[in-house]
Image (tube, rainbow, N blue to C red):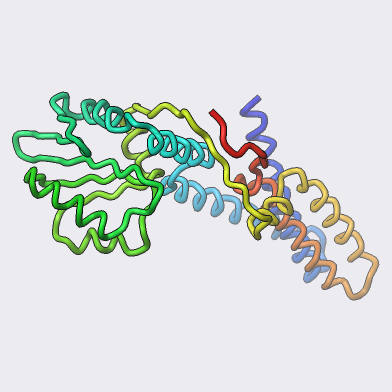
Length: 269
């Protein structure tokens, strides 16, 4: 069933691109066969380019939407737990069985280097002052590398850490998910989940307007407008509107960011 869905999605994507291209080639060219040929060629080129760009982006990509939600919930669960240091100790032992748990951090000693893992489990952003304080602990332990796990990074924190001349790795809740938990296959237990309640903002309006359920409406409207261009003399405006509706249909169907179900749950165990 999954493969059937992928095939249907690919067919729909190609058809929408072809239809968008055909609207404009047909407007400028009188020969139907030439419009169809050019539209087919442009569709193939665009589809291959889109696939290449999306694949390249996904390789660099952070996390999927579901994983981002899990990362947020894992951080919330750790930040509200009295035993978060125990979790990071168990995680560190995956890399070094002799990892030591101190009062506020984990120490990993090898023959050639010492790494200090500092979980900054605060709901506040990690600031430059916080890094300076943590740096003191690493100097006491003569650590060669400092790894700080936090929720959010202040705007200038990353640049500040690079200017200190010391190997410092900053991991926010999303980076920690992909580079620590996912890498070692060791995840914190989710005890709390949350969703922010906000007033309707621009992104919510986009989510409403470009939801997958609206694809059919946009597409049908585009077809009606395109058919109208065959009978109405001033058809450039109809071509423009039909093109916009096809673009809206593409965004609605293929952009997962706008297809998130809206839940009303605020906080639950």
